[in-house]
Image (tube, rainbow, N blue to C red; front, side):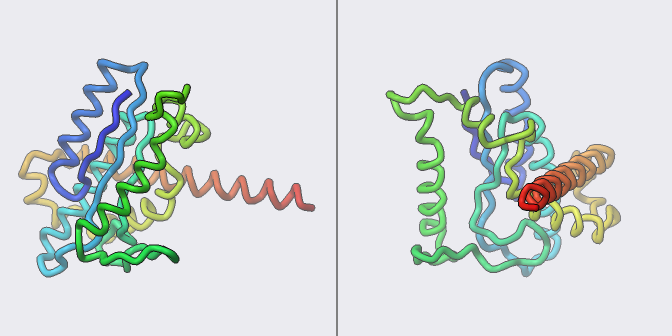
Length: 207
């Protein structure tokens, strides 16, 4: 299979989306695990760059999810939206979120642990098998996107497309953007409905 690590916050999200699309077309029977990377901290001084960051993330998540066996964001940032959130904290890990080599070490440890099932010579597992275990009910994105996608969609809806003129002028079609936004909204609602259904089933079982 193929493991793809791709930035979401810049133009590499588009490159990664095209790579996964080509891999999916040529090797449809192989597993494609895609990890979307975003920095912990962002430069909030430039509102235009921050706006582009959110647009790149939205388009990247929609397209990478569509062409991957499993897509999962890999970041210690508390949010993908416009407003910054505090970095993720761990009870037994002390790291400086402003240092890339600190945050990258935490993510590398998580990725190393998660991919053990198909990296060991003695293991019978594969990337496709791992993707099937993690993406239950045929969903190609991890459940952690439930909150992230909802917040991201909400931010984009508030901003509208009038501020996107220069972004669309760079080659992004407005129709593609609206389609990606709809995909994000559908995916977030899918997880919301799925979790509500699971909760209701658990409550009925307990009764």
